[in-house]
Image 1 (cartoon, one colour):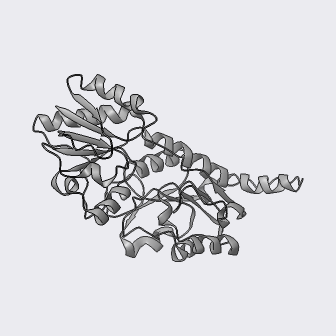
Image 2 (image 1 turned 60 degrees about the vertical axis):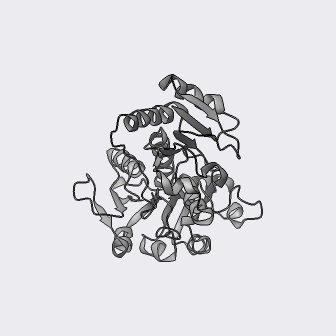
Image 3 (image 1 turned 45 degrees about the vertical axis):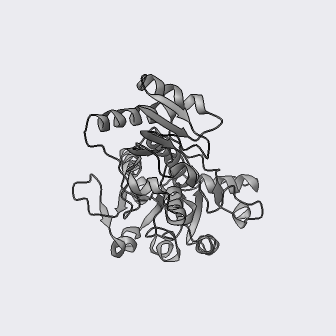
Length: 313
């Protein structure tokens, strides 16, 4: 069995070591951009189109990225043949859910307890305790009901926050209130105090964080975006923050990364920025998961995580 690997040029051994341990008989080849050597499987992160050209014996491609939006764009622009001929398989939580749960929980608690306002008071040397908030009055709305959204929702619910989730399809068995479909989006947002976005980026979700959605939330609500920058209509966010419809926001992702030094986000009050660090896939669980799926394919078994290009994830 031959496996081609492309990605993480500064950390190749960190990623290849657990793969070698899991598949000791496999021949693993680190690919250069123009390397067209035959391979049974490709494991890639943000590859050029040349890596995804027609390749002899190829059975599947595994994506190490957190989303498939990069590959979806590559598929639309360059139409690399491999993406049309074999399944693209995504990782199903390789350490990201716990990291993102902790990141989102930090910011929910930050806004819930009014630490943004205490920070502003500190800058003015102003001493004043705020009224003690009640969790029952601070509803968290989560956009996205996949593995990440479920993990975040269940954790916040265990802390005592009212939680609701919006997703693409109905989920009558979810342990929290769920809304689904475009027609239920603004209904879902009503009375939401913190809006958390973990949606995949697709043509249907691009620009979903916009004026209409912000207006549907409770006045003085907060936004936490850990999905993709292209979900945000930036002018609408700035207007919502200026008007007070949103009291604050935390953004970990941006339409252009790194965020340009001249971007107005840097100097907008009550807007907290982090450099796309909320979560990342980890080498050990990622490679163990991929190795297990390769073994399933070799045994003729069905694997989960195959990307549906129509859905966009």
